[in-house]
Amino acid sequence: MKQVCVLGNGQLGRMLRQAGEPLGIRVWPVGLDADPQAVPFAQSVITAEIERWPETALTRELARHNAFVNRDVFPLIADRLTQKQLLDKLGLPTAPWQLLADRSEWPQVFSRLGELAIVKRRTGGYDGRGQWRLRESDADTLPAECYGECIVEQGIHFSGEVSLVGARGHDGSAVFYPLTHNLHQDGILRTSVAFPQASATQQKQAETMLRAIMDELNYVGVMAMECFVTPQGLLINELAPRVHNSGHWTQNGASISQFELHLRAITGLPLPQPVVSSPSVMVNLIGSDLNYDWLKLPLVHLHWYDKEVREGRKVGHLNLSDNEPALIDATLEALAPLLPPEYASGIAWAQALLR
Image (cartoon, rainbow, N blue to C red; front, top):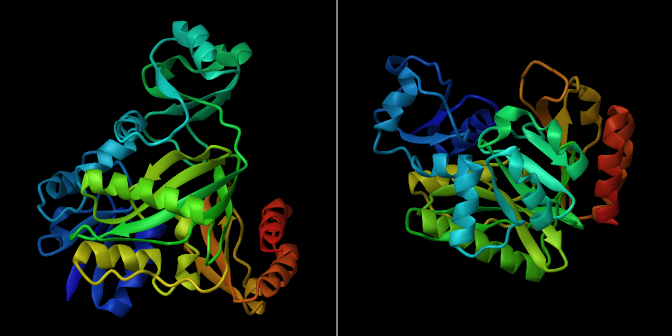
């Protein structure tokens, strides 16, 4: 039996474990503070559900493990400075950006980047945390400790956000899902919609870009690339060297889920092109209590993470998939009253895409 150790034991590790069971792959999600003696990593392939981690007894041990797939890629992508430098090196389009080293740079920043500046911490910060949208009049509100530890990007006017999830094998072969349409609110992903056929122009551009990144890094496994849709084409926003929230719809909407695809890639199993034959919608459950009434709707697949419910915390997701977009639309209409009011706009957005 193949074994995989996942560094990190959150919901992504949990779903990797679930995906491994039918394949006969034993997946061990492990917390960062786990006792190395209790972790069966010696005969395992190592992967991670997180991009950066503190030094612990376990991570020190794993750092020396020769089967830690993509070990040297994680720190490069986890730092937005080196991630942007990689994209620039490859000549791939991103929002104009620079390192923000000192508050004295603000006049030059706004002169170069325009009236809206997006400041992001180099490391950490996700789901809207560790980011600031600043205009010249409120630049002084940025905490002093951010200087030297942040990049600043031009605020982009975009018509939508999409992501591409793909996987690359040890032999250099790669496969991709159709582009996913994403709705973020307050920096956190609320809803995703995927169709069997994405815009051919956008799909080709996205696959070419993600393929170039994975090849440059000799990357193995699933990687996600978030993009802005602009009149000039797609602009890369951020990369994730792991299975990704915007790919959760693949659990019920594709012949092979992103979690199975990642396990196949890192363990050297066959990596065929996943088949997507119907539209899918994913609704993130954020800070909401479990409600089994959702399951009264036949298209709804519930994925509950068994985490303590807290405000702003991802605690599960709902997947809906069917050949008939009208049936998904009607199910979303019936689902909306079973969710708190803050879900209404994300459901309406998905319905508009389906119609």
